Image (tube, rainbow, N blue to C red; front, side, top):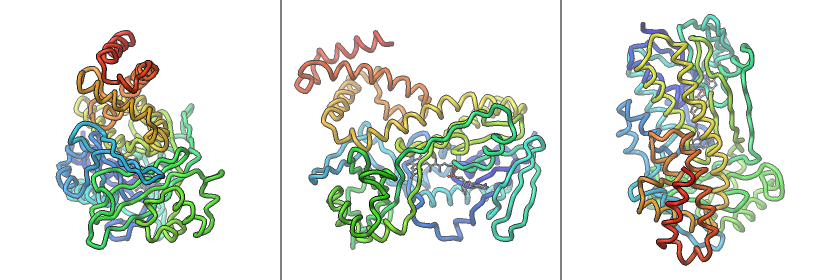
Length: 451
Ligand SMILES: Cc1cc2nc3c(=O)[nH]c(=O)nc-3n(C[C@H](O)[C@H](O)[C@H](O)COP(=O)(O)OP(=O)(O)OC[C@H]3O[C@@H](n4cnc5c(N)ncnc54)[C@H](O)[C@@H]3O)c2cc1C
């Protein structure tokens, strides 16, 4: 039976979900707290671009807009590491031609909303903030942000796609017994900065790379935009010796950047202004369970599982939620309580796994990518993968370049690979014989022992 469905949030996941559900013949009303971004200027400092990878592409491909998005996305084939002494080196992400793609968050969201509204079954209402949900009766309550008028909307099913600080999730927490919930803020915040295009409109840094300035306890990164600019993000502690709290004047900020990111500063003419104008964001991991209430409501995307951005997977994971929900609906579209149970059972271990991997990858990005031993380890893994592609796929590739390996399987494979590589790196004179037959045999043996 076709349903009247309410989706809370017209962000990336809510918009994609509305397209999927409309294609199945359901009638969808989407309620978004913010104004229509197609009519308003997007405020600065709110993560202008995102890295889209295979799981995200898979979600988009089913809507038919993947080709459109690819035209305005920039492939990044690896990390470009900027050392303090000015040295720069490139580390490929995977095999030749494998890339993650820099896409505009606003541009992607707009494309998804346009596509959604082309469907006669989808309506999006803006400036409508959800203030609560009557879970028993499937009634969502709203406050209009312009008129301050309250309203209620009854439907058959509600999806909470309202992001990391979800009102739908808050309602589950208030109204259900034994709702598991945790939120964890890391000590680092983030601030967006800018490298404008060169005078001729070209990129001031290598365009097809994700640039990283790893500095141990913190890092600066830069992703390319199609207008020739780069959006930079500083991930930096809130408090402590080198921290946001210490950079309280423009002079201190410029001095600090000149000392630790010397090759970036000449490319950032508005650094001091950007630094004090743009907000400092915090980074949270949210875990909760269950995600659903009977057959009336289900959480999806960041509302169910907000993660830190260091594996570039938050949106990709949310798009994968939509793909998996579709697959489950292909099997059963009559019993929605069972559908939601199957969905949360299938996704929870995977969202927990990517949450953990994302936290761990921060250490790799801000610290290890500049470390010689780490680079040797990566070289050995790539060499062994080339010889035995069926036996070894790096953790990064399992997460990023596979739309089929569940995150939880990637996590456990990654732990096993860690154990093996620890032993390999302890081998005597590994620097000289890293690509020897002996190393190859040892890796094969360890793989069979730890299978
Ligand atoms: C700095 C940073 C960098 C990131 N980089 C990447 C990356 O490279 N790759 C990647 O895959 N992911 C990345 N992410 C994660 C990604 O942004 C999120 O995972 C993704 O936006 C989740 O989509 P969503 O639709 O679930 O939530 P959101 O994008 O947050 O959308 C939720 C929507 O709901 C609306 N809303 C909220 N509350 C209400 C309410 N009460 N009523 C009605 N509407 C409401 C919001 O206005 C919003 O439009 C990054 C995140 C950050 C912070």
